[in-house]
Length: 517
Image (cartoon, rainbow, N blue to C red; front, side, top):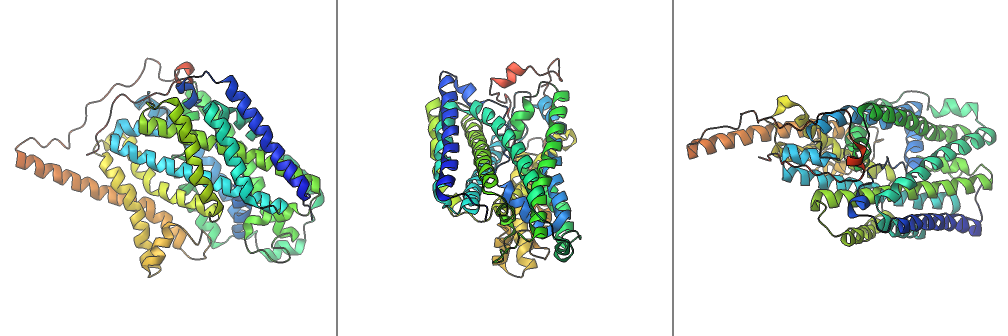
């Protein structure tokens, strides 16, 4: 079995965390005199591709086969291209804004902006829980050690240097994250290719090369789930608005899309190799496909597992501090408009970690956490982006909030009818059975959320216009709810060239506020 000894495992893990602590605190000391603006707005954080991918992608491979791997990888990477399309539009409409909530405030008003901010914070919270839970499970799978101390140590280490140094440190550790991803893929690919023996008879018996019902369902579920969820991740908007020109934005996003597709495909293929080599389900059989990658590693030499362990810890730490910084920056800007004292902001970094660590210890499967967040975004984002079209000037914040909440209610109604049980309808909102139940429950949930959201938003629009009409008749005033709003000139003389100094070191705030009702 390729598992380092107890002493070696502890040394590898805690030396890695120690290195991150020294690196982070050293950088924080150099940045100790930075302003609150610099602390909050590094504005170049990238996607937190953490250790959770080592569970979710191989697990999907064991359930949906090659079809699922390809769909999952493309569905995870391709939606990033939407930022190259939408960012120039939003930047022209709201040049002061650096995240989606700023445009939402300007277009839909304060109430809707706060609603979106709350959902964004919840999404980041769930991702942080998933990341801590994942690294605890990674360490347990690779070394047999208890994952609880690992969760606590990672939370403490990242909280110390993030609370002292702010967003810029998370940007620098993102570079470490990128190196670790490349190193992990290269080493794992070479060693698995050399040491692992594929059994031809298992290729046919597993049926993982054949299309399946789940695989076909994922062609719809995953693009909808992942695309809408990316809208909530402030990291994407921060990086998109930091681009100097729209051309630079397209180049950067295109490179990221190709890179992420390759990485996630290779990680997912590990699940296929584990099944075809007999490593999964193993002896005794492991029904949970999320451990397929680690069962495969057990067939490799100890030194390979040790290197993978270092990279997994570094990858998780870099991803977690990015999410941590994004949460604090989002809360400070969206909820308090950057009026909090910097020490209160630093204190907030410390406080949020306690509930996250507690929940991470008892968290369900990593994939389920992601799915809960995805379903929430699938109900909210479609009704939100309707306002990007100038033709939909009647659409207000009231419709967005009612539509988003109505989308979740529609999932419950669908589940209660489909399973003939209100309890099952409630469980479907949490997707307790995951994606792979063999029925149409999960598929129906991801159809009901966006479609139901738009329907409830339309009902809210009719209701609001009816109320305004009655109100105008009673008060004897003119009914002006159908009037097109006066255009606001938010364009600069150079729409394409955005001065990086204005974006990199400032936290812009929308100067105008739209109407909620």
